[in-house]
Length: 583
Image: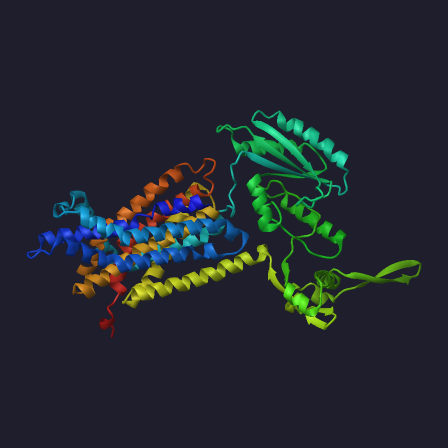
């Protein structure tokens, strides 16, 4: 994931330097045409200072976009965290170089002769941009309605894009999970079944080895019974092997054996899914209750209903309890202060919520156990666990005074991501309000950002890659790139009016758009060139995350670049105002 972070940053590492150098060359070109030119070093210094503030604020916004992934403490956060950290460190280093080394190198290497006139094709593009911006400004309501409709369509299409958070890894290794439909099946029976399955699997021409694990070892981490077994299938090192077809062939072999439930997953997919949800399936349905017979009946009904749905594979019904929803972290100091042992607390929790047999009673000729537990109204509400009173040598004390209770990974991921995303959004707003003297520009940036995701969603839909970790990172990256370009564009308008004394009118809008055309196009092209190899090799092993990310960024670059070059100037001309111009 660290390499993935550097791959994401690859396209934006030189953006700060591009903006600085292009501004220096433009100022040197204008200085050469001035009747009273300034010294070369003064021009370079002033041009560097002109873009220093916008570049710093734009980079801070890009970093803020990746902060939620960095600080999320769930398993997903630990998985994506190295990518976010690598990206932040790379972009920060790029900013430092652009603010220090780049101006110094320009002072040493650039001469007045380097500020040559613009190429004809650039002049042609600027003329076309002027016409396009004027047309957008004249038809702003129509264009705005079209952009809003496209944005709404992109948002509405997201639930239908499919995909999973963790992509299918092409790693040349499969794990076949086999569970007997009869709990308590003997070890010898499962071993004989494994030998027959292994013999068939080894007949496949692309299989190198297979090994079988049955039940659990004394110190093993897998809490299985002898009725469950796992096969590890290693494929031959051959790039021509179609792993999707290999997975289907393995499933076909397992379907020949009645009385078993099976699934075929990749090794990484198996381990990551178990860490995230306690199961290996991409979709898990859990049914809770007290009557095992009723639970089995409901489970069978669900299996019968889902079995009719097209596209489902490895459908299983596991008769076992779900993963915990509350984690209890005991505090040794608090236990010692109350004279309690760990076993005392855990036994009280188990007695209250799982029940403890304290005696027996007679019902006619039948002996019935007497079980002590809390009432149903409290037992099925885990949030009441913190109020459970624990008896000790020094009296009773609530469990919340002895332990820290928190949701497990499965429950807290959404909460953390939502919280940190909200904080990141607030941080971005603070940065924008500090960056702009014209308050309307801050809101223009925020309004412009969702529209920039249109191209990314369209690229996901066109390639059929679905929503995954890679595409989500790609959408976040597009969000940051679009924010950077918008900040540089609007900050340049402020500089033209406030520092150079230009009148805020349509001519100034067109001038500012022309002067930011080259840096925006250059940063987009450099980013596209950096990510194109990853997108091209998207279907190759090892590119399951970086490939979809690159495709999403490339699609988002198209829409964000068009919006920043054509629509944003028209919006700025219509809604931006100097503070002194407000009535």
